[in-house]
Image (cartoon, rainbow, N blue to C red):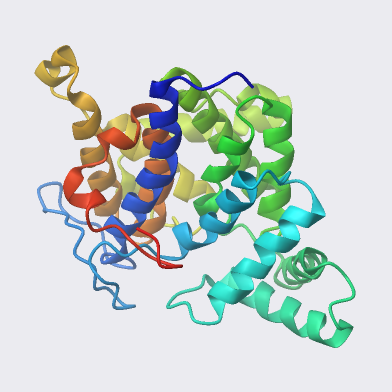
Length: 319
């Protein structure tokens, strides 16, 4: 595609930085109950896994190999890219503080199959087969573990909406076979792509890419999120309510009129939105990471508070 403008480059960088910032902000509150609207939220670390202040969790750690494969020019739909991504996930999961239950099960089973096979089959093929087996055994695989890591896909396909959908669905299905997980990833990535290119937040942008019946289902879900607060989505470990919680935080966080008029609202709205997502409780890091990916795409890396930027860090030794 044509060269990005300075503003678009800032927004592209904002996708990754605000994802990581939201993730690190929510880390210390994960699995906790909803918080009152006036409760301060800080990038404090702690929580059940003993995160350092500013340390991101599995959400960002699983997104990084996707971003790196894309940055090296690999097609995220191809076996070569997905093998490399899967290998990086294996390396990370061996020492990670926290790995989602669905993802851990899939990687464990795939690792056993790969060892038995002598790695004759592509690694991603083992992961995909394990995900399918887990889905069939459990009857479901609609956790939020693919949506939380999906934001980099949008950056790899800024000039190709159709390719974006294919990649988002394929990478989702590596660990989460449920079609709703793939739909959620495609919808969110299309919104991120649009925000990077235009600076506008339009979460309904991708509805037209779905079959009519599914578009209606998701439109109703987005409407419900737009009229509720994040704590209304108590089952945010489920991909649908994780997305709804993130959209509820974005759409329901007001911006003071004077800040909007002065054009200084971006950093304020991003901070207040991610704090609102955390106050929703439960899977706080994931909801805030998902919301951060979209608002970072709209507002840019320059909108992420400097106090967060100075301390955000995580696997594999990045800042």
